[in-house]
Amino acid sequence: MYKKVLKTIKEKNLINKNDSVIVGVSGGPDSMFLLSILYEIQKIEDFNIIVCHVNHGVRGIESDQDEEFVKNTCKDLNIPFYSIKVDMDQYAKENNLTSEEAGRELRYRFFRKTLAKYGKGSIAVAHNRNDQAETLLMRFIRGTGIDGLKGMDYKNNDIIRPVLDIARDDIEKYIEDNKISVRIDKTNKMDIYRRNSIRLNLIPMIEKDYNPSIIDTLYRTSWIMERDSNFINDYTNDIFRNIVKITSNNVQINTKDLMKIHKAIQYRLIRLSIEQVIGHLKGVEEVHIQSIINIATNNTTGKKITISNNVEAYISYDKLILQTKKEKDISKIDSILDLNNSNYISELDLDIRFEIIENNIENIKSKDMFIKYFDYDKIEGDLFIKNRESGDRFKPLGMKGTKKLKDYFIDEKIPRDERDSTPLIYDKHGILWVVGHRISEDYKIDKSTKKVLKISINK
Image (cartoon, rainbow, N blue to C red; front, side, top):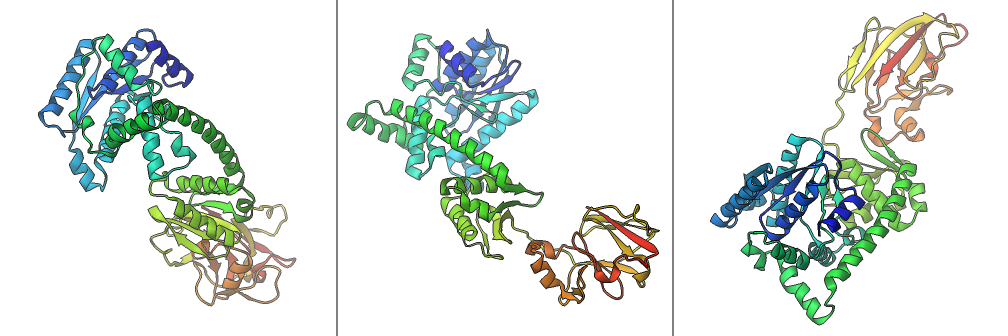
């Protein structure tokens, strides 16, 4: 049996040399099987086993006896042992979770905390072929796509499942043949959780009335779905790299490019983008993805929606932008600038520097959008910095007349959410520079210019 599990470990690259492997052991048949098999494999492979046990306290003294049993087993095998006692039901209540979700969160939190003490490695859990079948049925009943029907992965970040190929009947036979002591959790035989109900009621009914090999059938289905899902995800990632722009504040997708691709990939692309923004997809449903695709299809600048997890999606000039909803407005600024020193504007997190130089073509070469040159003698009085106000006007370089700043922003397709945070440098007569964009015609360098004011902005 250990050779079959070792084959899975090698093929799926689950354990590497010198890894520390945290093994979650409840004391039940599945986890004791996993521990026994890994203990045998460890004798020929170079990795270390550490056992973690979570006492959920659900079964009172029996839970304490489980903990003591696993502790003594580890003592006999000379394996490091860690345990923790938690109040699963209280945690579920405080965090609006089901008991199953709460138990899972608490277990993995403890496993990862223990792994952190050892460094490089993974967390091995005892999910088997029957668990995979139960997972597929649960997800199908709830509603899912190809990704959900591929079931549990052999490896998911730091979680590994070395015995996912092994059927529960084979596990029980191994336990019996090798006379391995185990603890029996009576709640596993009680119809109190959805997974238990599927295991105790639905699967036996399907085996009896429809397909006696349903466990193997679902296992094969998961493999087929995994193969197809991996291909589609790889294809989606290629598209993502080509048409999605990631900034420090948001994710941007060209709506024309988005509309060219198949709807199935559109959905996956939006999911990937949301995950990029908030780091997960919890609470994100089909209806949310569809609503985002709808505004991208209509492509109306200014159209905005907010979905779960405070994710905001809006259209800005042929771009679909996804970001977390901003909770506060940009602070209003209007400050005098010191031409002799560096000026740090904390509200915008930028540094402004000035330099007076001769009007020499060698001195005026930068094409940096945050470095501009002005006729120093055309500036009157002090210089100031502010953000936009209603009624602002300026004369963009190359124009004869003035223009409303609002109209300039619209014509230049400057996104709405950037307009309030775009700095304006001005003197007593008007705006010299819409920072990051155009300077004013009134302050440009010409043949009569003697002194040049160089303004540099570091963001």
